[in-house]
Amino acid sequence: MASSLVTGGAGFIGSHVAEELVRLGHRVTVLDDLSGGFKDNVPEGARLVEGSVVNAGLVDTLFKRERFDYVYHLAAYAAEGLSHFIKRFNYENNLIGSVNLINAAVNAGTVKCFVFTSSIAVYGKGQVPMAEDMTPTPEDPYGIAKFAVEMDLAESREMFGLPYVIFRPHNVYGERQNLGDRYRNVIGIFMNQAMRGEPFTVFGDGRQTRAFSHVSEVAPVIARACEKPEAWGQVFNIGADKPYAVADMAKVVAEAMGVKLQMKHLPPRNETVDAYASHDNVRRYFADLIKPVELQDGIRRMAAWAKTAGSRKPSEFGAIEVAKNLPPGWRL
Image (cartoon, rainbow, N blue to C red; front, side, top):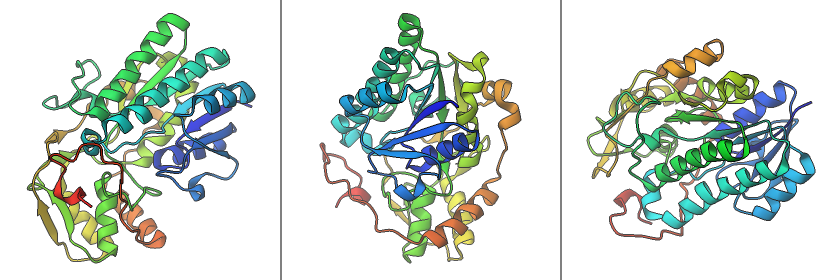
């Protein structure tokens, strides 16, 4: 039985990856500090260790004790826009925490493959459709941290022989998303606002486009990456193909939630206007696992879950490091 570590396995995408691994017969250990996840998300059959990837001592102890075959690193604070204002927190959690895991994986000597969930944030703006052969030019600290980890994995493979697979998902939504997170995951934000009787808050005119990806299009492929040695050492965009304007997506959410569409337009953020990616590479290796989900169907599925889960009070990130130019909707 393969022993697998899933960091962030009490969170959104991580819990779906952990669930798939349990189904495949892995012995799964979830490492999560529960800062953005929930114990209820951890699938039956997986063991939860409460703690952070920033805690190098804890990470080293886990690797020595469990002798992991595979590492699935999904733990991150993925609030891309907020990362400008929490630089230190971003780099500690998303870069240093990742390095702790890479060090432990190399030192353990048992890890057959390290799977890292990066982001299309590494590409920056003005590169659409985003393709893996493009030169990344990240424009925010979150993307910078993710790309730095990608480069460190490539270096660690060259220096120490650590096999890896990198996935760059984008705009993932679906069941178990943290509906109370005010800084990321716009579909979840809209659904929470719908249940709270509030208008949907939209930065700018809402014509910015994203290829919204249901979690079922992403998690199974990530979980099965270690089964394909021919894919090791590669980078894959993963997610939906068709981009939608945020304003158009809002109409679909309002219909699924059974509310009248009301939008409150806020000043535009400094963000990429159009973001969608090519998925030719991932289809070459994982075509049998890719199950496209139409936006309307995925949102209906998530809405049904959201209505059962109920609304949540929007989160408050209390450790803003730079207040200058902080968007009005994020001021507490």
